[in-house]
Length: 178
Image 1 (cartoon, rainbow, N blue to C red):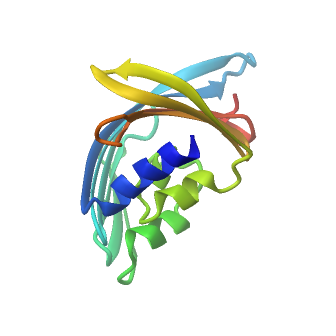
Image 2: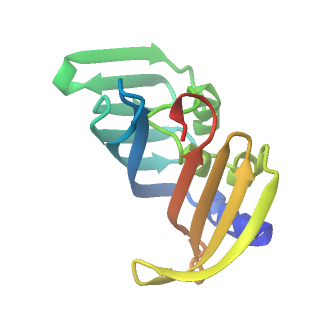
């Protein structure tokens, strides 16, 4: 499982640009104690070393993040919200390190954007399992499962192109449980 994850990480690290879409369900406790799922979706475009655009939509704070290595800008059109801060020639890696863990805008795929995805994905890992192979969107994939600090996560990686096709993260600790 770790060898397959390393191969995918190396493919992503060699990429000068990444462009992908994210769909997710975010469980939140309702006033009754029951967990309800809110829908989240994002479109992510990144160009190394210092350009990132994240368009987030869904039930949680719909917003756009623009990062150009000099400034970080967040805009939420529905809420008439605009914020900008200096990013002083930082790289994508520096931006990721400073991003709030669990942020609706970037998590859970933030590690995939780093220059060394493998380091971030394996940090705190206690278990790795090759589940088997499956088809995802018509592509043959290797299905891997991992346990890390407070999370159980799975990833399906294309067998031919070594690119991630699906990722599922279940948070066991903190505000995002289950």
